[in-house]
Each structure stands twice: as structure tokens, then as C-alpha cells.
Image 1 (cartoon, rainbow, N blue to C red):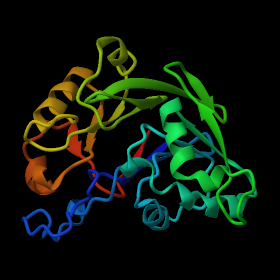
Image 2: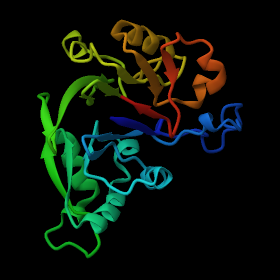
Image 3: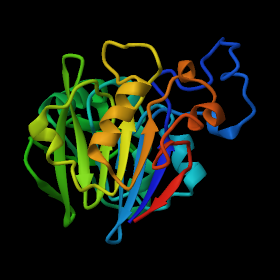
Image 4: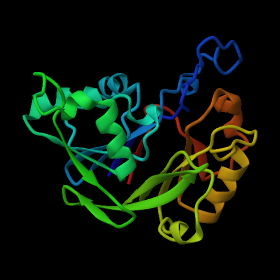
Length: 253
């Protein structure tokens, strides 16, 4: 399995438009964060979790020539806005792309991208097949996937575990029974927005505490705001097996 962090930023990205803080002015490439998304190459399959507003830029940077399926964590725009860009993969493969998400996500997609699901489709629009998932294991093209339900304030969000890899974004609470699904993970990707308390995201301290409880071999933080601080400075504070993710980081399992 090869995991590529396509984006590691929060909903506004980093730099934030109009901001002149030291993080937004940083010349360190690790402080340039597109909206959070991840690509997984496993068993010959190419899977993306979330297609945010930067999806086109992200897959061009990765030179991603194949896309077999998309999983959605939740319906917020910073995780869904790039769905239209998958049509390029329809053109390449001549196939519909399966899209997986809970019912609220699929309903939102059908409203926001109504032209994709129109009875009489305009030529060149994306072709997808929707698959509703619940909090039960399912397969994506013969790849076993375990959904993990977390809470993003009052919004239920699915994280996903694929083999020894777990992806948990946009959360500030996880129940003990859901946490049981995560134990034994070797690579954990986890939300860590900023240092200050937030209504719907983990702070840095909360993320570190949860990461230490899970005790994966390697943990990488994502969904990072400019308020967290400079990548190079924050990393100095972290335990050895916990790191900040950055756009383009590849992890092999």
C-alpha cells in the first residue's frame, strides 16, 4: 500500500487568503496546504478519500493516471467540491466511477451536482455509481474497508480503515466502541486543526493524546490551520512517532 497525502489543510487552505501571518508568508513548502484529501494505492486499485476544491491541482501534481473509486467522509464543501474533476478519469477508462458515502453525503452530492444525475445528461459530464455505506464493513472493488464513525461537532463523519491504515479527519469526538476499530493500525492520519479549542476539530494537544492512546507506529496530523504554527517549529514539540503531514507526503506500508 502507498498512501499519498494530497492535501493537509483546513477548509480555507494555507496560506489563508488575505493573511500576512508568518505561516501564510512561509517559504517552507510544508506550510503550503491544500484542502485535505488522500490517495491510496492498494491491490492494484487507485482510491481517493474526498475530492475537495483543490482536487484537480492535487491529482495533476501526483500525475495520477488512474482512479477506480472515491470514498467520502462527509458532505462539507471542502471535501466534496471537486467531484466534477473525476470526469477526466471517465474519459480515460470509459467506465463509471463508484462513489461511496453515507446517505446524507450522497443526497448532498445529488443536490449540488444535479447535472451529474440528470435523466438527460449533458455530454462530457461525470459518470458515477453511488453506493450508500453504513457503519458496517464493505468492499471497494475487492478492497475491504472498515468505516469508523466520529463526530464533527454534531455532524457524523466516517473515517476509514483499510488494512493497517486509518484515516480520521474532521472530528472532535470518537466513541470507545469506534476507537476499538482503530487499535492495531500501523499508520494513522488524524485531524489536528490548531492549538486553541475549537467546536468541531481536535486541538494539537487533543490529537497528540488520542494518537498516544492509539499508539500506531506512525501518526501524521492533517486538516491543519495556519493558526497551528510553522511546520518546522511544531514538529520539534511532537513525540518521535507523531509528525505533521504535508502535501505530497508518501507513506509506504
